[in-house]
Image (cartoon, rainbow, N blue to C red):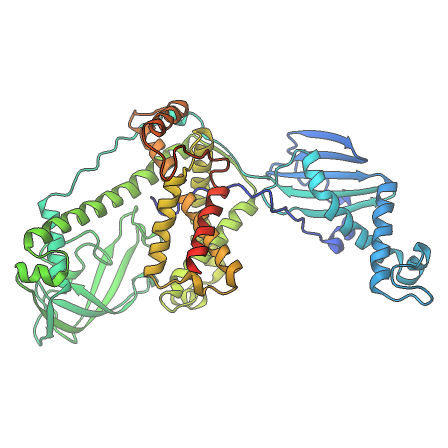
Amino acid sequence: MPQGVRVRFPPSPSYTHVIAKSREAATKNSLSEYTGCFTFQARNYEYEEDKLKIEKTIEETHEARLVVEVEPEKMDTYKRRAARKISERGKIPGFRPGKAPYEMIVRTYGEQAIIEQAVDHFIDAEYSNILKEAEVEPGASGTLESIDSLEPPKFTFRVPLAPEVDLGDYRAIRLPYEWSAPDEKSLDAALEDLRQMYATTENVEREAQEGDYVLVDVKSETTELNRAAFAAFIRKEERDTEWPYQGFAKELIGLKPGDTKTIKHTFPADWDVQALQGKEAELEVTVKTVRAVSLPELDDEFAKTTGAGETMEALREALKKDVENRSKAEYDDKYFVDLIEKVKEGATFKYHQHSLDHEGEHVLEDLGQRLAQQNMDLDTYFKVRNTTREQFIEEEVKPVAKKRFERSLVLDELVRREKIEVDNEALDAEFNQTLSAMTMQGVDLSKIRGGRQGQQRVAQAVAMESANRVLTRRALDVLKSIAVGEYVPPEERQQEVASAEEVLPAEGSAESEEMADKTESDAGDASNEAVSKSE
């Protein structure tokens, strides 16, 4: 599965988009201040139902501007409700809490205080109805832009819309899938790497040569190339995975401990690290130590030492499978990224800036978690990179967030268009595999903070993520079938699944239980089972 690609589930109906209420900002701004901000007004609608009059304008920024007019009588109801709440919390001489007449509450606390709370009550009670009547699907929390008037009550809201994507003629896309199993040369290289893991080394006071480990300090004005105590292995045959570029280690041949060498290198324009693309860099390399390597013999005794087999033949077979799996995973990663990019070329996206900002937050969170595993925080990372948080977000986070977000939108829409679903068997297998991986990493559900509720939340998150991964894989499989000319329409795929279910006996019962909700329901069942087992 390519990195940065995942399917998003739509917001659960149980979660209400709560509007951001900014009374102070709203009351300071009038409608006239916002007139003309956006010249593009594609669609205008008006609604009148339940004493709400709504005028909707879809802006170029992919947000809805809703001007809502409320019947005075309806607003009076919220004002009286607000006054009662105020009197319940406060004290008015001569009256029990909540029993003072409206006029007395107004004289005691002021009408402005009542209006502010009345607006709160109005928004809490009516906001979801406003969105429903205006046929607005929110992509994020809306904002109260202004209170235009109180006689009659009129409010202006801005609501970011849910992202939209049109995939175009994606079924016409073609991209050959040309992975082939690695040859014996690749297997020999993997075996040599394994020997290196079990090798012994010793410091030598001589010039570095092929087969040596050389410990070096690398200094450069280019931040990405600074390394302290970097261990370079001088292989006979160079590899494209070598840091910082292929052939670097051989530049160290002939250097002794204490020697310094200046190396210049120009990186290709399509280099993996964006900051190095097309850049000519100068590296000052200082040798700290040279270590000679003694490799173990490739015999059955070595095979037993690795734990991968009792004989060299068994070791090579195990290593062959591993090399093939890694090779295919690397090929798939690039193939699917390229394939999704092809879909994006013919797709049309509409989304609010808030969506990108939100994805950017996820990118930073992911980076922060990876850094934490290396005992480093983001602030330290920015210092090491000689950059600021703002500059890093602008130059690196935003481009990554845009790619990730649009790829996710493509897969979301592909899941919908191709009617891709998650079945119980696949979800259970993925869920159990994830739990096993967590257990191997030392995670114990029974020790999660928050008791059973805490365990339930973690298990549900794991279940939803498991369903997410299954959906992503299936979406990519469908996309691949399109690209190689082996596409099967959704209806035929569903018929094949139904036929298979008729032939194969259902596990644990005579009949297969129909899935009413293939994501949340199954995820909930799986997470409940996990919590029960942890107890």
